[in-house]
Length: 509
Image (cartoon, rainbow, N blue to C red; front, top):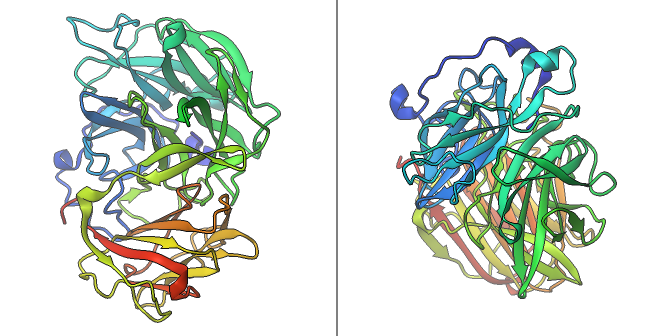
């Protein structure tokens, strides 16, 4: 996770006392503010960035996250906590981890230690173990190069309360300024834990029998992939394609994304328990939009890999025009592999949203440019999705707008074979000079037919094309909700199927 160092200098002070942060404990009437996401997770108040410690345990999805409970800008990092049973409705819980004498609580992961290799389990209780980066602001300010180290905490009550390990840190910094964001998994073939760690401009793999003693195994990435900024928030996991197992390595980078600022790249290849080998040297992006970052997957979900990213960009994350809270998470996404002309590519599609899909209109393919596709939906819906199947791949423009003339445009340029998002007239854009520029993404599929999906919330749009091979995420800040949807340039013969669905708020309001 990246920080604003100017803010760091202003906020590197003594550590704050514990406090409860759920909306219920604060007594705050919330989730009604302008720009507030209604189908995405956002905290009741204050600052949020990277998703952390994502793990599935006892029929519950745990989401921890970088959190600053004292302001709506980045500050001394805590681990916030939320849970869900369906990946749609979230309950925000009290803060899980607070800063301490070793530093702020930066990004990391959590595992289910079923075999009690750590020895933290007691009375037959299986421990949840969090592995995170301790970031020492005093060491950073003093100019040292070892101010980030890896530490442990454990929970014996399903993640409600946490105890930090007395022997922290368990992996000390060897002298690398950026040494953080451990993603840990159990590697069953060799009965050991694998830590995938971001180490400045590469990934370093460590192994351990018990989560406490770590040994360096290998490095990856010095001469491969995008290197426009520091590597952060990695993830390593297997996925099957046509019966064969491939390994996927996710590496977030800031800056250096395809449309500026922060973004998520990935590699496919092989992993033997010690070393990762990429299939080729191409740079690939999991999401080409400007506003998906720090994305990783839930642990302990079996063959299912579910991805979640932070829905913002470090170019302007501290400046977006929200008041009580700042930033949110993407919709969780199912990951899968696809083969396109011999290349193994990672695809992502939103998880099932049936629980909040309230009304679906199946529309006739003969769409006119002046036809408002949302006209038949009850105006109570301020968030919705569009699903379409196209017979061909001609140019198209999908315009979302409101009565104030603000609009965001998603389209496809056949000549350039690029998808794009234009938010130059989307609403409030003047808080940062880079916010209004267009974002582009290549079409990676070659089929004549395709599918497109749009998920629209109060201040975001997520676009999925060609089975999720191309994905784009962008935030936006219209003065009033978008309530009109038009498709331009497509002819009736170009559309095989078309529907729009109203989405109910997860907050029940």
